[in-house]
Length: 283
Image (cartoon, rainbow, N blue to C red; front, side, top):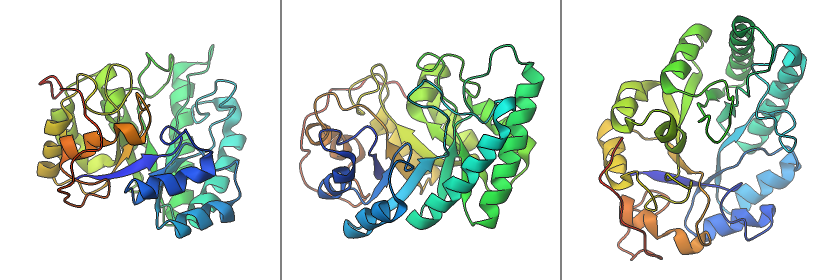
């Protein structure tokens, strides 16, 4: 059965950030993720996790000036020192929060920089980060992101991410597979997941178009969840979508499409809200 975690950067935004931990637990989630923890004290976040019985599933490395439009600095040759400092900071937070994996956003390719230099910088930075993470007992993830939502993002396809993992050569480097981004860039979800699953350590979901909850768009999530069960995927699935009409009001898709509660336990409870019918597309 799928095991879902709540992305607190996108879900439960009706409440202030620190109150979202309680909201996630009340909705039945046992794990949470979010973009960045760095605006909050480590001890405060750890206390919220402990108080509400939640696992910290994932957060990202520092990614530059996010509010200013930066989306990661790992491929920027002139930001290597900043990137390395961010690795140390991410390890401090992940260790304090009991978070076993951290995602690295490659970033938007810098303008007027030789493509080979950009690629080499990303490999060197990932190799450095993977080494530091391994010493701390952590996994490092890289995520392809679609270039419609994020024009110019350097890492944007699953095969490209797999080639990057091979080039780095670290046994604790894996792919973060976001179904929404993959659908926009390449489709063929079922076969891609089957082919690359040994390299995938975390999955995130949203429907397309709109990036709303599963069941609102073209992706056949009922089929996809069964497919992941058949493949033996036992990791978390991060709910990184924009609720169409309130977080709690839209959570009925979990029971309707996955036949489970957020934690992955069998549940006979009726869905809390209706979901729209899906098209019969699986990839």
